[in-house]
Image (tube, rainbow, N blue to C red):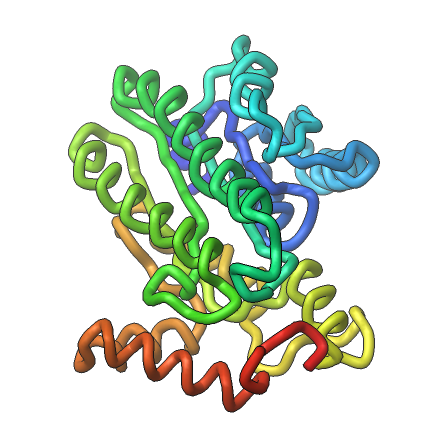
Length: 278
């Protein structure tokens, strides 16, 4: 599989959000398949550790790009830093919302940051790297989205909106590119055990420590396994039993009913304000 995989999706892949969790695991899996990886995140020392581990365990080449995806020129930084590489796969794994608060509890700049990081940078990178993939007649694009994309919910107004954009954008991109040799996949994640989720749940008082796994969360490695098993089965794959069950349930409901259901469940679980720590 490795030779065929590297021919299809190599010689280089870019993984945005590669410092930990699903992104770091995805990058290492690519490396184990013979693809060199560019690791993108905002913390140099963390990226260096991830890159060193990947090199030691797989022998693959790595490159790190330190960039804050909320910067206006983030996409240009990534594009310029990889101008000398033939990129056969783009993985966009960034985009958690660390606040989980009502829309009006934060300045509008907080929502604009999510829009920049979750939508604009992803769209710009897809536009730049998809063109050469189409010309070569091979490649892959994997964009991570969320169950929050399926319907609007409290404390996720802007986040859910950005993830809905990611979902529909990726599905549309699949419609245009899948018959041109480029595999496009939207991964819809539910509750997934990542460092970011553990930190959020700890701050909300739902975990005793960040070393504890959130109850019911899908392992990040399982998400990556599903992604690799379904690279050619786009446009959309749900990962985790919670999202799959939700999508099945929502089929029999109107959107209004789904939103009201989620609002009711959220209020019962977190209280009427559903603020972190409540």
